[in-house]
Length: 80
Ligand SMILES: [Zn+2]
Image (cartoon, rainbow, N blue to C red; front, side, top):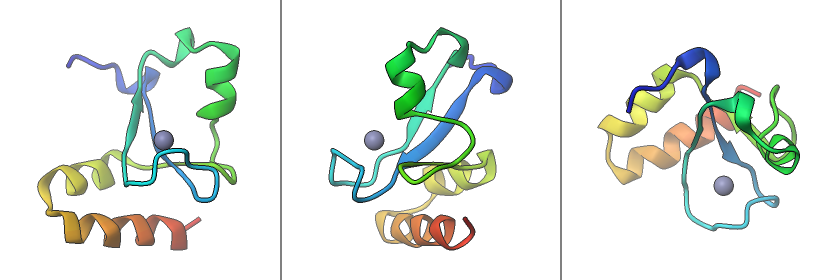
């Protein structure tokens, strides 16, 4: 994928506002083309239902096993 980092948003939906009950990362691009409802679902900055992550965290997730994914997720929550 050839995503422009300036037009890309990444993050997790946060319980109890998640509708899918396994860990999944949203990568949205280009954010300028999001509809109004999508802007509400994937807001910036962070809020109670959507937590963005840095590209460093994403690289960790892509390189680690499932057990570590849960640790990274917990880490993100603690730094909010
Ligand atoms: Zn989600």
